[in-house]
Image 1 (cartoon, rainbow, N blue to C red):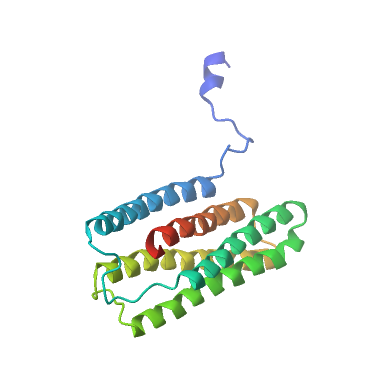
Image 2: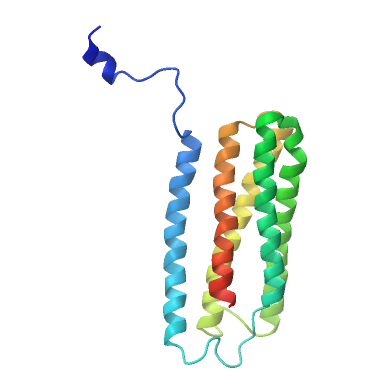
Length: 193
């Protein structure tokens, strides 16, 4: 076998630098970051062109309650980080932290839903103003991502319980959930303040 032929042969038996599941999730998350960047740019332009934001007569967004809910979501991310750390040493001990992450994430989504119901009662709808339209579009898009993230966290939890959770699946789950968690403070600052 010549030196040239070994240089182009695949390296069998070696792990890739980034597992396929993680790389795929990173590519997906990057595309979602681009989408949210466009949405944030659109609301920023709309706010800059408005005489007053939010428009007069529109419901005010619940700043303090949502700040608390933001802390809940951040705590969910920390719990997942801890679960992954524990998983490396003793997978069976990661149950509690992963469950805490899921429950905190579920609280965040339910609390957002509760907020939405209150805002709808106060007259803030998709069609009430640009303020309402942007609010529900951007926060709703994030909520869909949070629900998808909770679904993936649930699959990870079920795999962990049945001892079929792989480090690659958990790492890909972390990438997506950390995106959901990390994006929210930016949305909170741009939409609520």
